Length: 171
Image 1 (spheres, one colour):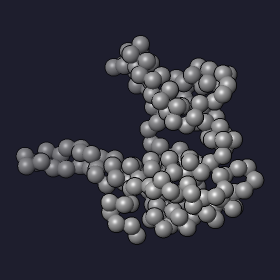
Image 2 (spheres, one colour):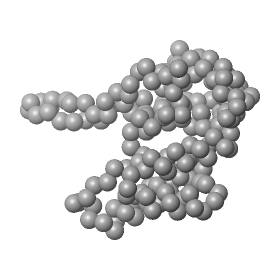
Image 3 (cartoon, one colour):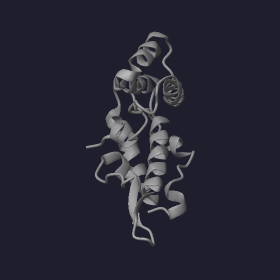
């Protein structure tokens, strides 16, 4: 296993180790390259789903006996590593697979984002995954500003990213 400081740092040269970007026709070849690298970096649990994300918050009792919810440092570490693995995997996907991923995200958005998804799908080219994330955050901010945010809370599409890693499930 990598030293603690290296575990969450994805090497930029990883994409050089994967000679085949994932297409519709080469999943097994792509997987044969990805799995040993993921195991070597100790991040296979982010791909196979065997280890769930730690709780985002932990209950801690203060010196007065009051229980407070505090951010879980283990979750923050896991989340940072998960985002790096996701970015690394995205860098090994072909343009057509990235477009499919964008379409999947747009199709899975809730009713509050139906107009947004329709506009994104209607105006080619599709945004990149990073651009889509930025556009979704901008849309959410605009929505919250124009609506009564205190009386209506919408589900944000970027929360719980671990539950949306459908593309990265390995058997």
